[in-house]
Image (cartoon, rainbow over all chains, first blue to last red; front, side, top):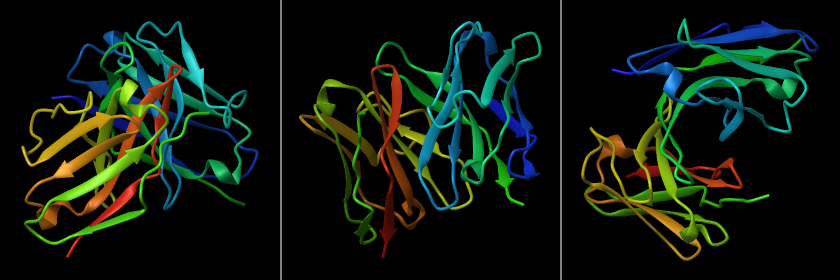
Amino acid sequence: EVQLLESGGGLVQPGGSLRLSCAASGFTFSSYAMSWVRQAPGKGLERVSAISGSGGITYYADSVKGRFTISRDNSKNTLDLQMNSLRAEDTAVYYCAKRSGDGSSYYFDSWGQGTLLTVSS
Amino acid sequence: SYELTQPPSVSVSPGQTASITCSGDKLGDKYACWYQQKPGQSPVLVIYQNNKRPSGIPERFSGSNSGNAATLTISGTQAMDEADYYCQAWDSSTVVFGGGTKLTVL
């Protein structure tokens, strides 16, 4: 059974930093690209960052580019998101999601339970 | 940038068929998938590659995609199907989510 367990959320002041982690199990972690998808309170879903299975290719949404860094440790089956220069608009539940599919038919077939980041003074 | 548009809300009576649309330019040329999200819970994939159901998803969930719209259909809707539903597609190697539709079963 695939399990994704996020941790690291909390309350941070504007301009601060935080690191989210996702522990994965139940699948061959290194074979799958992973993403961080966030959901602001009462809003929809937004993919903020992604990383290939090997870790060699990364993606960032324009809204977080230059502030967030995604990384993975395939030896420990963990996915991280380092978030710097945090803003109020980064407040959201952050989900770790496993990507499946191929070519143009990618989809997220497993999601973690989410971790809440609140950016406020 | 590519956009997917969903109606904010859809209502259906128990036992009836619910249809939720997702519109996008030439969406039929892409693959669409759908997620169900109940309050306080994580999204769950219910349809992928336009019309495939993951293991464990009831047969009453089906999908189609052609032209400029994808549709999620729930036949014999049950109270437990009340949730937010999001469509998703890929465009130029970028994930695009629809804004979500709140399905009310009443």
